[in-house]
Structures are given as C-alpha cells and as structure tokens.
Length: 236
Ligand SMILES: NC(=O)c1ccc[n+]([C@@H]2O[C@H](COP(=O)([O-])OP(=O)(O)OC[C@H]3O[C@@H](n4cnc5c(N)ncnc54)[C@H](OP(=O)(O)O)[C@@H]3O)[C@@H](O)[C@H]2O)c1
Image 1 (spheres, rainbow, N blue to C red):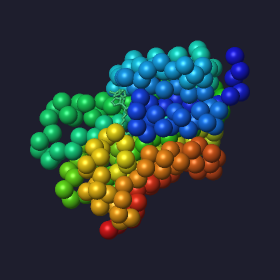
Image 2 (cartoon, rainbow, N blue to C red):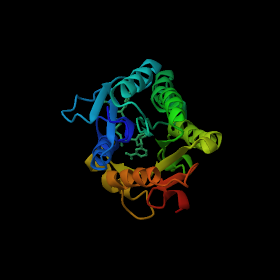
Image 3 (cartoon, rainbow, N blue to C red):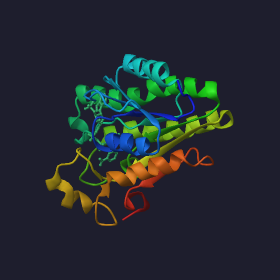
C-alpha cells in the first residue's frame, strides 16, 4: 500500500457540498473516504465509500476502521454531514431535537475522536467542520435554535480542539456558510434566500469547497471559523 498519498474522510458525502468536496479532493490526488447513509460505491479505486448513519457511533467506528484498513492513514477529516430544521422554538419536538443533535453533534464527536487518535500516530492532521453563520447572526423570520445550538457547539469545540492539539501537529478549523445553493434549498426559494445576504445572493457550493481547501493548505491557521456567508456575520 502506498501510504504517502494523503487521505481525507468526508461525511455527508452522498450529495451537495460533501459530494463536491469528494470531487475536489480527488482532483488534488487525495484518497477519499466518503460516508453518508445513501452513498453509493465508487468505481474510482481511490474512493472508498462507507454507508451509514453518522449519528450512530458504530458508523464512526466502521468508517475509521475501513479507512485505516484500505488507505493506512488519515490526514484530514471534513465534518460536513448536517441537517437543518427551522421551526419556532416551542414547536420543536423531542424527535427534532434527537435527530438534529444526533447528526450535527454525535456525527462530529465520535468520528473526530477516532480520526484524531489516528492523526496523533502521525503527528499531523486537520479537522474541518461545516458550521453556519446563523450561530453568529440569527435572522428574523428564520427561527432555528437547533441549528445555533448544534453548530454553535461545533464552533466552540473547534477552538477547544485547536488549542488542545496545537503542539501535536493537529489543526482544527470550521467553515461558516451563509445560505448555499445545494439540494438543501429548492430552486424556487433561491431569490428570497439570496436577499438575506448583504451581497444580495446565495453562495455556491464551490465557495465552501474553496474555503475547506484553503484551510487544509494553511499550516499556520488553526482555531479559525472562516465565514463564507456573503457578509451575513458582519451585519446588515
Ligand atoms: N446549504 C446551506 O445553505 C448550508 C448553510 C449552512 C450550513 N450548511 C451545512 O453544510 C453541510 C452540507 O450541507 P448541504 O447543503 O450539502 O446539505 P445536503 O445537500 O442536504 O446534504 C447533507 C448531507 O448530509 C448527509 N446526512 C444527513 N443525515 C445524515 C445521517 N443521519 N447520517 C449520515 N449522513 C447524513 C446526507 O446524506 P444521506 O442523506 O445520504 O445520509 C447528505 O450527504 C451541512 O452540515 C449543513 O448544515 C449548509
């Protein structure tokens, strides 16, 4: 096995930003491990797909074990899997709470633990998590406390991990998107959603991919929450 080629694990990789990340990392000749519930096998020998629910810690175990068995190392983990449920606060059900915290928090916590344990063996690595600028900038008319609760947790944990591992060669960063043209948002909503950004339009998936690739190539950047949000977090 050639273990000098870099290896990235991408969660939420069956569609949207995650699928674009898989393509972008392959263009940079990374070996890619793509996981999501509905991810399909790839014909590319440098892409390993592992199907599973990232809210279940057993999926994290399987993804990391299969990554090491097939590719021998982990250089980068992108915690991209996420779900968004916008509702008035008192309308959230216990099931909404369980679903959102499972994907957005369990889906970060368990796989990040296992990935960092592998990175420590090599004395290097990078964890990037996809957050949301709603954390810093709540929007009147888009009630979404569960997004702020969970993604705000990712922002805080990113800084905490950055400091805990700074001297061990492992970096932690986050990308904080505005509203992005992904399958998450139906085409007919784009004009209205675009108007929620100071720049007057939504972001593209390539904007988020570019930010992840920048952070991955920036050895002096750790603990950063990189806002890619058309100015949302700056103000209105
Ligand atoms: N699009 C936006 O406007 C926007 C804004 C801010 C932040 N974000 C964040 O960006 C990330 C990617 O979003 P996107 O727009 O690309 O969304 P998307 O098109 O809905 O894709 C979400 C991905 O997460 C996976 N996923 C969902 N539940 C899962 C589960 N239980 N287990 C494993 N995988 C699961 C989905 O795969 P399966 O269904 O196959 O499992 C899919 O691959 C998310 O973290 C999202 O919160 C997006």
